[in-house]
Image (tube, helix red, strand yellow):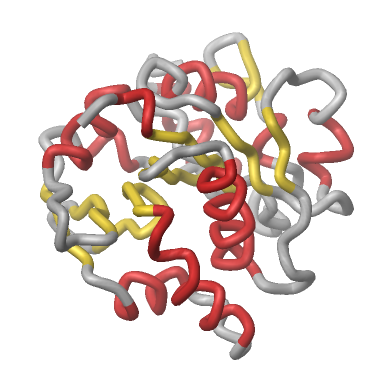
Length: 200
């Protein structure tokens, strides 16, 4: 598959309650987490889209500082699934057949994650998500833009869970070679732990 058909989507609309501040703007390895993730996935994906409501802290603080393409028209209160649907519509309009999707709190992702997930994609599969020894990671996956119609129906029905998205379409789980790629920074102690290990 040609990489020029693959968009990148960063879901950045969360409220970051446990962190206490917007995670997209947190500094990691000398840049914001959003910038670090965007630069990484841009090695494989074009365009790179950031899904966040115009009312979100991420959009208010970072949209003027970034040349990324922001998608702000998700249905209000629809959670990450609503952001995914809005961004998949934008990716489809940009001519992408597939989009790599990740959250804005995964600073250790590498381009190899995109490669491994794309390798699991076949014509009959709509979504490939990462899996580790403990759980699925629906916010680390590749999604065909053709699946957006069915996902939109879920949002219209009031569904908020990303897990419902992967249950509603033909999905494959791929056990990735490096579980560190899937590390989430949900709370201050998570960030302190990464910094203490010398990762950032």
